[in-house]
Image (cartoon, rainbow, N blue to C red; front, side):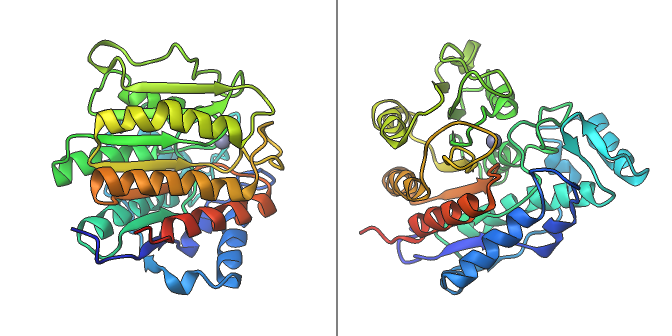
Amino acid sequence: MNNSINTTGVVYDKRYLNHRTGNHPECPERLTSIFEYLEEKGVVKETIRIEPYPAPVEFVEYIHNKEYIESVKHRCAIGSVMLDMDTPLSRETYDVALLAVGGVLSAIDAIMNGTVRNGLCLVRPPGHHAMPDRGMGFCIFNNIAIGARYIQKKYKMKRVAIIDWDVHHGNGTQFVFYEDPTVFYCSLHQFPHYPGTGNIHEVGLHKGEGYTMNAPLGAGADITVYRKVFEERFLPAIKRFNPEFILISSGFDAHRDDPLAGINLKSENYGLLTRMIVSLARELCDSRLVSVLEGGYNLNALKSSVYEHLCGLMKTVQ
Ligand SMILES: [Zn+2]
């Protein structure tokens, strides 16, 4: 049991700043502003710093095909500046993307070896739009999907739940697990909005039917709507699924000040949502929970939302 361990692990590394994106919303300053704010608030010293390592390609291949992985490596090496129309590359991007995946794997390992109770991965580039054969939407490798498979393969856990509260639908993650009854994927997102998927009727296919759940939300939705979706749909469904590990795709672009979307959450609302999931993880899976940073593009909104989220993760609920 992990009950004696009440510490939250935080993955952060300056090398994540080396994914240089120029004048782009997904910029290195996102991470520096978060980390400086967490330091300023005095919470970093109450957490355990988890060192990431570059993920071996064999783990990335759980989700992505070799040709795509090689093409990212090659394009970075020759100095390509864009992977698709909105996904920038720099020379270091390939290495940083492997380090983002490795950050998630390190957090999972730290929980499984009893070092921490749960973990927050402050990584970039984000991942939930990345498809097996292509990156898109600022995402190179699907960090959280690789993490889910790693949990299953390395730790022989059968059922993993992914909760995605980034304001954009995690089309890549949904695609990967759409016919898979061992990974339950649920997402709240603005709809219609980028990337266009995440209709309520997308519920999984074949053996995976019933293991994908979408909550498309109109612009202006607030915490009342989020809470209702959690209480009436997501939490009961996850309890029925009974996961052995819970992952969160934690984008903070549903904040009302975010420039890329029109949802109306406040920073403290992320604390409430976090506490609901922390409580669920305690009930279902010995508190095993890893949160992976996705979007969030207003630096002030992002840093205060991450702070509320981290406080929720650190909270020791008896
Ligand atoms: Zn997003």
